[in-house]
Image (cartoon, rainbow, N blue to C red; front, side, top):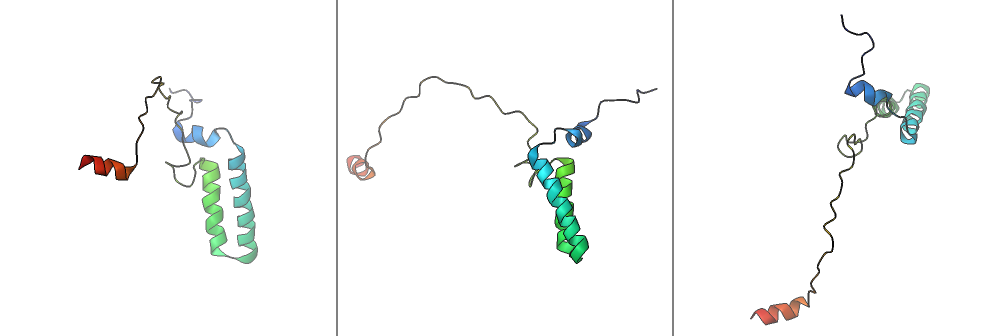
Length: 98
């Protein structure tokens, strides 16, 4: 039989992952909007509360590719010194080509 306590897969690990300040703010805003929706009966408040609540619980940003990066930053290769050449006035360059 399989082990009952298996390591969580990607989604569960992301949900249980570190709760940073932005995640707590999203959860607090979702709670506030939920209360506003209950108090006023406003469907927009319910929708925003659901959106922010899902963002907090599932730990994703406004766009998964833009805000919720799960990959480590790529290392930048150092190519040493960079050679620059001076670029002159575009009008002079055009006159020299003629």
